[in-house]
Length: 312
Image (cartoon, rainbow, N blue to C red):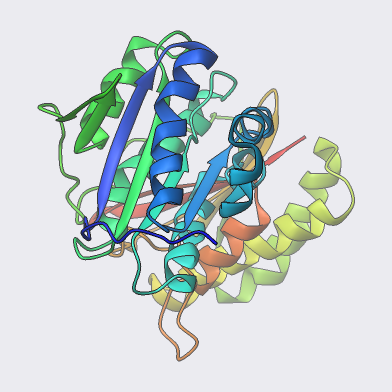
């Protein structure tokens, strides 16, 4: 029977692993996982199905001591990943934990990449210093652009290259009050535009339904989008002055709906963690994140815009 060792509690650690190609991925990730197995530390690995197959083959029977999940499924909308890490921590209280998460790939659109990079920044405020979780985030130097690698240095307090662990001299701790104050690409001038208030929620649902079918969205995804936009518009009515603007348009790959209003979102993790069962905000954003392929937030004291995307 395996007898785990008891390494000292490390607290929360968010570290980028820089590697080049499959061989260096193995030599970077496998020792990290095996150290967790040897220490009796629950370990969750969120990587692609291809990388999961590779790691399972290398670990052999030791893979049974590790939890694997397909990041292409959980992380299709990266706003869902923090909830997965929090659930992992909650289900394993009082012990050191390890995680491997690789949300950034070469196949993502510019908007998807921006949301993955925001996710990496928000991981630095998603857990307090006392959470005994060590997250390792692999970045492929051979596949990703120099800008993506530079951003990884800015969003990870610690880095690992080869066997060298260092503190990132370029790390920028996110300001919780400003992290959502960012620019989103402008909506096209020919986007459908509808100004709404509480009396117009039914019309919003009808507009979204019509535009979804016109764009070619089918099946349950039409209903999912209607529910998501209705939740966001209801938030505007109830919490942001009672009125807002709906815009709808398509690009080459997606149907996009945006709700803009004069409110400010003060919680940077809004929509990324489940709402409290005892009340409070965040329910609408949480629902929209579970139903849509991507959700983007821009918020400042001047107002907010929330975009949801569905792939066509």
